[in-house]
Image (cartoon, rainbow, N blue to C red; front, side, top):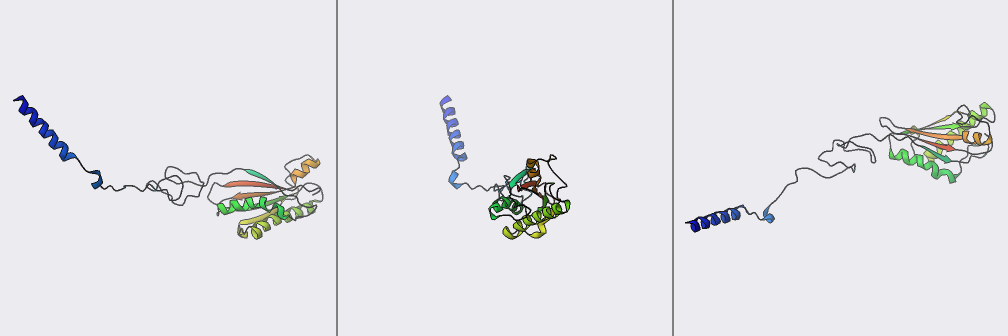
Length: 201
């Protein structure tokens, strides 16, 4: 009796195991969600809500975000000839860094601020600072093809010194051109300082 019960149990178990066996080659599965990251922001399409995030921007879990806030000052040394706004071509690669940023963020605009030392007359310093600011915007527009509608040049003369001492070293630091880049609805804010180091104004 015990033997027949044992044989019946084994037969039933064997039948169940055969019935539950599935050949994996015959199975087909469908991916329920799109796991691709088409805009390269680190968020898969299944979760993506903002498909055109700027490259390099910080994003939330849904791929949405603004261009991250950039607060940097970059000093670029441009040697202006004495009492002149001429920029030698050797300094173009340094100014190109501004152009590269403008191309990367096409909603941005730049204001070029010209500043001089306090030597010379106020009238000439104002005029010279404007000429130098204009010279930088001209290089951006003509050499690096930045649309002039994105460029503004302002000459402040000697009215905004960053060093109040009247030593030659201090006046050299006050002779500068500042490129201030801002965006529309982004948090982008980046500044460059382009210093001139001529001997007088």
